Length: 557
Image 1: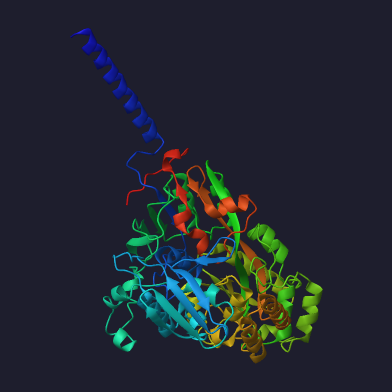
Image 2 (image 1 turned 45 degrees about the vertical axis):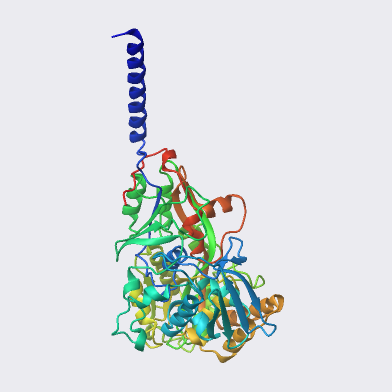
């Protein structure tokens, strides 16, 4: 062999050795060039994908990623254009006209037009579930003026209407109608595509459904032709929600590098344990979520205001916050992170002397043993049981017998349908649907929301109904907020709810290769999105698995 060839041989051989060494190093770190950028997260259950059906946190995370809305809420709570690039509002506040972005494509390639906006509004109003209540009472209808121009007519002035539009998710009319079950309840619309939309999407959002197995997982895939573009080159290509929040399973997945973000329903003890895993970080932020014990005001013994106040004074709020939900803070009917909350109201505190005084004024005093207090907590959320047990222990000091019932969420939904079946007390987390106190006040205390998990109080107070309606029809924001203050004071006086705390949403994530936008904002002392679901707009996440410093299990779609 000639010397020149021999040198080239050595060089090539050395190069191959270096390549092999690098590949071995990357392999040991759990990363290969074939790996895709992905975010894997857990939750209590897999979501309902139809944006007309549900309003809880889990579902909203996926609505905001699969679908687009006319308006988008920025992280500071302000509103910015989305599918609607501009709009005009009539002087009387009853007509809203929107110019749509042209050329927006649905996931199946169809173009989004004003007809799809009209269809989506009519669909959610007809079905009347989920966020439908935001529109049915306020909107007369909508019509397509041109291909890219749509007009809404309101029945009455509804000042937060633009804010509410973040919850009108636009569906592909043709795709939904091509997948209807004709045996449904909606005449020529059959089932309105509800059965098909359980496991499919008809959206134009940055992600689309790749695979859905009910009660197991949801896998979303990046929509490469998204109309808003992909300036973020490290956005996850896939997002997988695993339908479990079982503590040991979540901890194991994270330690093996098979999970990027935990769910927010883990106990504080488990979150602290997971946070001890190398290269993890705990994100803690507020999204306006209030932990309530809803008190059925139409059922003995919680139909008595003095009984309700006695219970409110026998709760050790400070201990619940310090021991069970660290980082959370006291709250009234509206969380302090929600615009329009009343800062002058003082939340209830533990005061057994006042509790005893109130219980003695109750019509049930002297016969409390005949009227046990039935308290529901949601199975899967183990910290709720701890709260229920603390309530039980303190209530016993007043002679109140608390019967604790563990119930799955579906039982909550069924039980809340009538005042007779609604338990005396139900522990439920509730957050605003849009960034104003009016959202919580309307969904929680207006008579129109009775029979849902938004209101287990069955308050049905005409004066409060009138006050709420007056407030949300007041265009001047300062005046509107003052009216919100008065409503909160009125509700506090009636004591239909034990407002335990404003929850600090906590989730542990892999900080060595995941940039969690909300966590970054918190570090900078900036506000994060007060509308639940939008803090998990995955298009803004950044994932760099090649930077993993601890075990990383490559994602295989």
